[in-house]
Amino acid sequence: MIEIRPAGKRVRVVFNDEVIAESRDALVLKEGKYPPVYYLPRKDVKMERLIRTSHTTHCPHKGDATYYSVCNGRTARNAVWSYEQPIEQVQAIKDHLAFYPDKVDAIDCS
Image 1 (cartoon, one colour):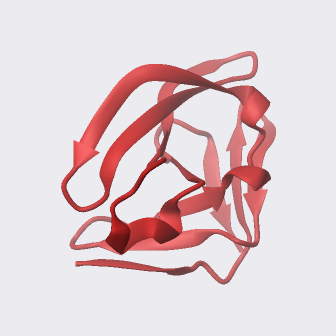
Image 2 (spheres, helix red, strand yellow):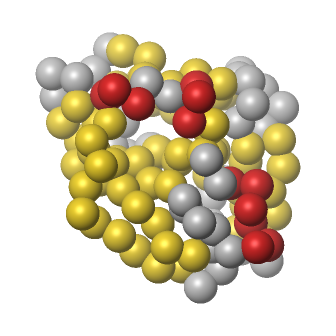
């Protein structure tokens, strides 16, 4: 079962000493036994720091994911993903991006 709700706090993503995303409108997605994942609206992400890659994956519960690398003096390949056309049950994450915690320097929530 997937649960999506407003994070209710500021979520900030740091990579190579730069805040590349910061939002008070983030969503938190909880899915089964997996750790919660923060999805930030595209409007709150420095999209000029992201390069879309050819990597894709499919999740039967969310749909097809597209991926981005983060580049700003350093590169983290496929560090960011997005469900651009999510299935109906998770439409809330459309136009949002999520970051792998182990590929960025920090994901801070306060």
